[in-house]
Length: 195
Image 1 (cartoon, rainbow, N blue to C red):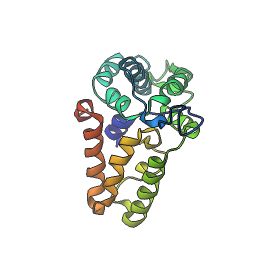
Image 2 (image 1 turned 90 degrees about the vertical axis):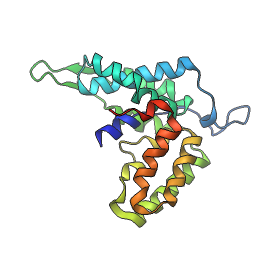
Image 3 (image 1 turned 60 degrees about the vertical axis):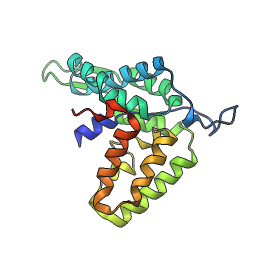
């Protein structure tokens, strides 16, 4: 589950409506290379701080794989709020234990950002299909795919949600494999790296 969490750690925010002035869904706006780099670095720093406040080696590994993967999946209108939330986590190294503790978890940032991110029809379709499949399948796949947990699906671009929604047509024992495979397919080469 930790590797899945690492792979999918990401978040999103801040559109006040579901369409922009030009009529495009905020979930469909193109990301610039500098935005992807910025959010990759921010999410990886948050992840590294979750392991060790000085987690520089972990940070570098993340920037080459899971962080880049996450940045490719989440909505660009989420980047500023996610970056701001990470900056306010107030992480400190505990001298007695050597552990890094943060006043706010990275997952809490995902939840906060998702609460204010404008919904989209793709997000609604995904949520309905996921909950229906989870009800039919029980524990055949993790409920994190449908709830607020290790998978920040509420922050994903519409194209990602549409691709993942198709997995709920699979047999119960194939849903998890399908979801992970779609993340790799939709997130690009960085999502295919093993951690």
